[in-house]
Length: 234
Figure 1 (cartoon, rainbow, N blue to C red):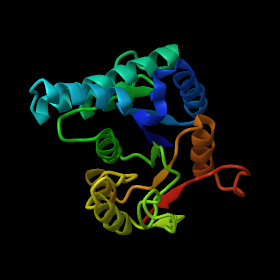
Figure 2 (cartoon, helix red, strand yellow; figure 1 turned 60 degrees about the vertical axis):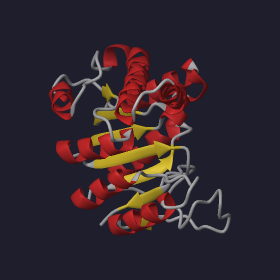
Figure 3 (cartoon, rainbow, N blue to C red; figure 1 turned 90 degrees about the vertical axis):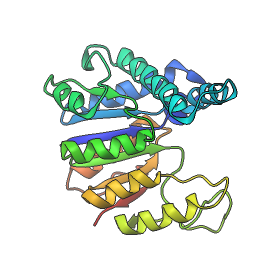
Figure 4 (cartoon, rainbow, N blue to C red; figure 1 turned 90 degrees about the horizontal axis):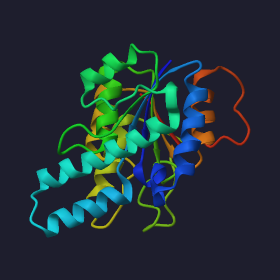
């Protein structure tokens, strides 16, 4: 099974602690024993901090995006270091390079690609380009809700939803100032376009992400203690 995993910077690089990178490295090595794995890393707090400073000194939004991309690639390099020989040695800079890197048999880790795309969007496009069997978005929330649960405590979580429903929900949340969507609009539209099997889940525990992916790859009874988040399927 070919798996594309988007790991948010707020998960992987929160407080920039090595333990998080090591934990994901352990989980990814286990996953790669039976699967082909490509990871896209986000920028997190560090990227936001650098972008805020860049804006303050006069950078335009494209220049800010490039700075954010640099940070995502630094996070990718840290994860590559934690993976050691199990990883392809450099983050690919585009989708074609990523496909070429897969032929190495190693875990491929990359960051952002071009301005105007979040790393979730990059990962969604990559999943479509590679014809991935599964796309997983490991983020700071445990799934997709009917509304932003931080603003609306009564919001209900979807266990399963269609790509069309995802686009509708994401657009509604994004329109409200200060709200936080679990999937950005472009990524949602790509998921709808290619109808790829997708899971949106809490990525805080790397082992839970591992077990959730394993659960999707086998036909058996649900694994106890595994929190799958929201499945998106046509």
